[in-house]
Length: 529
Ligand code: FAD
Ligand code: NAP
Image (cartoon, rainbow, N blue to C red; front, side):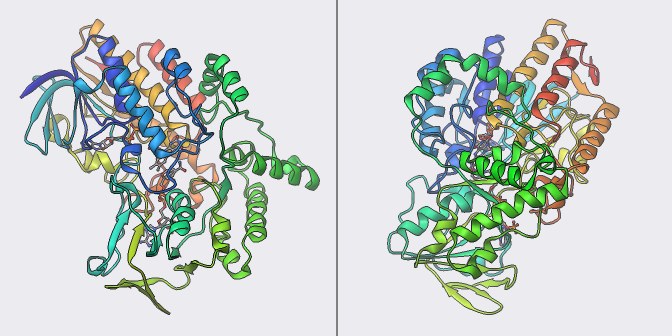
């Protein structure tokens, strides 16, 4: 049994920075990581085309001026190997590895109320004890394998985008089927199509995707950003989405039809998330949203030559942006290739996976490789898979049966001294997530420092404060169009999961100001014992 001050679970961007911050406080910290390397998301998601969709110079750590000055991002949106390389560089530069235990999954954690200690069990049999437990287990770290009848019978290779073989996979001359057209599917489809003999895409829900217009970062732009990095990072911290892109907040409904077309076209040409975040009413007014949606549909109709395929690719059953927006490189263009076919499995659902492909109600499809781009048990999946027991043995999974509740998305009643990074109820997946991780890490480190300085043995969220926070998160989401789609934000992609909108929608800047105010005023909403 190893005794530590803090155990951190997960060595993605959150866990790595948490370790660095706790070391600075002089606390003996160990990080436990299931994978055999750092990087989290970027360690596991090695599918072709995987890359970030928040610009790399923004989607990167801001805590070290030296680090951000020395690192060179070659492209506007870095590839998975580039981001993994960066994560490894950070681990080396800050000498993190000596306190990370790899290839070890945390299976259980139990709080002893008398000792005020957590006991942490792992799959390797190693046990740890610690005064604090920080869950940096990720919002998108548990791949969701769909319950497709007959999946076990398939004789070819099955690959999940979020658990991709480390050695890669060569699709050359192979026939491939892919299920899933969210961000992972939309990124991988053009590259699989480039190599495969034939690719069949099985689409259930069409998604909105905006072009990335990826390319090298001009040196002048890089220099400008580096010269102004501190100010730009401040700007990100004061923004809705945790990014330094200009937030224009134009109201779609206040524009004339000509101005509207001009604005939509300008955002489309800029590429990426600004198409959503530039418009103040896009996520609150159905009428405004429909105008933004129809502009995208018309782009799809203009790109995809086969009108029937174009209509299948046009999302019509949910508001624009209510499922996470996708950002692509040549996605819609891929359907103009001769070696790509599209099957609408909403109209003609999958009946079963066969030994050589799959069968829908109307046809039999054959392929050698099946790619599942079917997403994650998001936001809570990594936490509910661990037997986390708080005071009196209560199980977190049980407490969250009807939906997760966490005060500020960070702390849970009955689970003292446990903190969740980017937990449900925080902006997390609606923001630039590296910045969201940094903000949580810094806030948690400050709270732990406060506890240490004041000889507190237990820090716990007050039940009423937690309840009220959860209500506020739900009410805010209820005023937006986010709740009008069967998205993973709501847990809708996992059968049986409670339907509760999990991210905080009021904006990164409002959220972090709230956290700062709480810290400054002696942590109201927490019991400090
Ligand atoms: P993760 O990177 O998920 O790390 C969590 C770690 O915890 C993992 O390594 C996991 O193995 C480990 N872990 C989990 N459970 C256990 C356990 N029981 N025991 C031991 N270890 C455990 N966000 C953006 O803002 N912009 C983007 O462009 C972007 N692109 C993305 C692209 C992909 C393909 C995906 C899947 C997500 C993307 N995200 C993006 C979200 C991304 O998850 C975050 O940006 C960020 O990397 C999360 O870091 P993290 O450390 O919080 O979690
Ligand atoms: P996702 O958005 O949840 O998409 C999963 C896809 O699989 C959907 O099209 C879904 O269809 C389909 N699907 C799931 N189960 C199915 C079934 N049983 N039968 C048929 N289709 C099924 O997952 P993801 O694409 O992995 O992305 C998850 C999140 O990770 C993103 O939203 C984003 O936050 C992050 N990410 C970001 C990037 C990036 O660009 N940087 C890349 C990848 C991932 P339905 O919609 O009909 O359920």
